[in-house]
Image 1 (cartoon, one colour):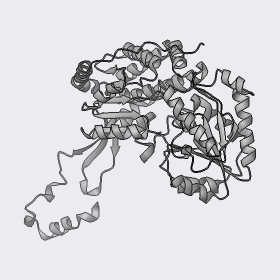
Image 2 (tube, rainbow, N blue to C red):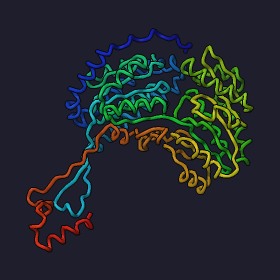
Image 3 (cartoon, rainbow, N blue to C red):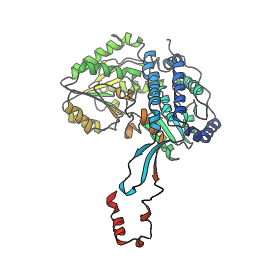
Image 4 (spheres, rainbow, N blue to C red):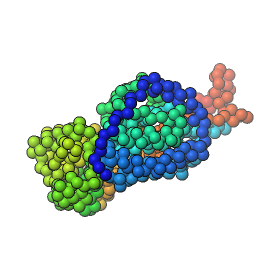
Length: 485
């Protein structure tokens, strides 16, 4: 494929058009809410079929936006979305079935259940780094839960947004699912509307803005954010396996991934060996020379000039502070290319320690005692993911119990994201709420508690005033009812 030629930006939607679609969805959402499992499954199947029908356009779009290889696009974009759809189709009837729950003794004669009901009209604000994956996966959950959805993809991945608009237009009427292209002003217009739920994927800084705007209407939110994800490699780890996976997941999508390893703590006794193996794996996966790596079809480019400048500035600042470049370090502003780069001996004063990198730069530092790793991780905002490479149950349990983050993968990198049976999401600075599988379905649902009273006998009758009318034995029983709960 050739380098991207940026197409003319789509026309900005008028605020009046946005308001019109929003009103249509408000009027229609109870109709959608009444849809059966079979009807929702049919909608999801249409989406699945459309993704396959548009497969070539999808891979071409992400190449034009990110220079992402077709193989990586199939793995990280189309494959993820269709896997989510298939998992949802298989399980949706069970998820929608009301769940019977126990009732306390004091409510003898009643029956209780939980119904998962749609929230109503939902907004999905999506990012540019995995445009199909991180836009359409929450749409799958929202549709499965019986909601109407308005989607705002990132303006920085315009080719992907254009294809998604066609796909969703083929599968859904606008009163059920609509997509608006455009710049940040479109998102600002949407955030003024009283949505019932907002799903946002992006940076913590913008997440705070979304949360403030949602608070104006007391809308619930799901925030999928990011953070400086730590990786810990102890002295018992399989270094070859760790090095290969760390090199791969860090370079995937040019490091523009919320689950990419940000820095590696490695036990000092195996530090040099791990660094050497990571270097060898970068050469094996992407080319032995800088020239080969620059021409590799498997290395993406940074999304736009501003992001390139930001990541390049972090690299330059680290080197000025005395960081050692073990491999990589070459950049090209014209093509927004930054070579996969491994940095060691990076001083704490370097800016790169203070913010999520979101690029193909990997920091590696040695540690002597696991306690210093725990202290360092806990001194930072809570990250989205943590990766532990170890054969020691004691070390694994120490890191698991003494730190807090969204999710953990042990002896692999990023694999937890691909398991639809696991909840995915952050905590505090790295996010609010969980998604994927049943957790995504529940995120777009209201868990409605329902209690049914027996029509023949009401257990609550004796509790009604005036309380003095009850015989002494009944009064004593009522006064002691607190023990029953």
